[in-house]
Image (cartoon, rainbow, N blue to C red; front, side):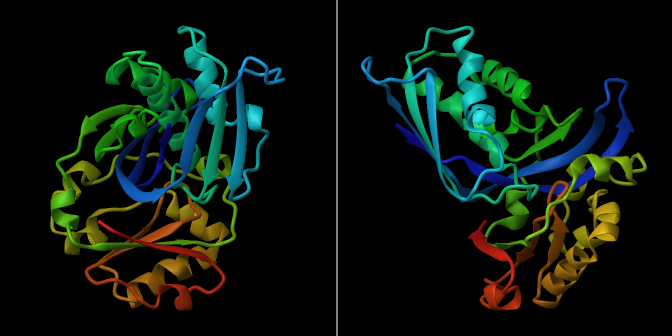
Length: 279
């Protein structure tokens, strides 16, 4: 059985408070993007010589972690602690760029929960799957339904967003991923927590032409200071005609939302990975 974990972007991202547990409270609108990995699972033969119950193979983009630490394997182990699961082979084909703020690893883990639930008829239910996913990472719960959502807390408290899809219907999204690694921990250290003048949940209800003035990602200030070339990419997206442009998550990917398909994207960013998806 195969599934296709999707990416996400953040429509606005505000860090509103520091928590006693060392995390931060945020406000953001998660929006799914049709840029996907592929994840397949198959039953492992009883005769197959393996000392692990979830044998993971990763192809495609290089993944900078041991396969036993991959969220796909952690998701299997999480469910196996409460449900009787057979041994399986898992094959993950990575296309979503890593260290990009696009949620690729989180999506893989959450979609593994979904896939195991469907394949082995666990009947876990959406709310319970979200609870399991939240144990994997702060933004993992979003990917259980992968529908536009307003997120608060660490990112695990989800409420339906007032469909920004209505504003974005028919637009194109360009994603630009430079060869830059951003330290999320360092970025958080540079953040000054504050409540925004307008909540991002309300801003995305407005016409997209107003987003530039009212919607922001608090990580841009410290990340752009450390990597000014990212600010240059954002500026170039606007020059190419984007109605709105922003860094996603803590970076380093940036996205631009265009009324018409940006045909010159790859030529404009020859040293970056580029993707175009229709919304």
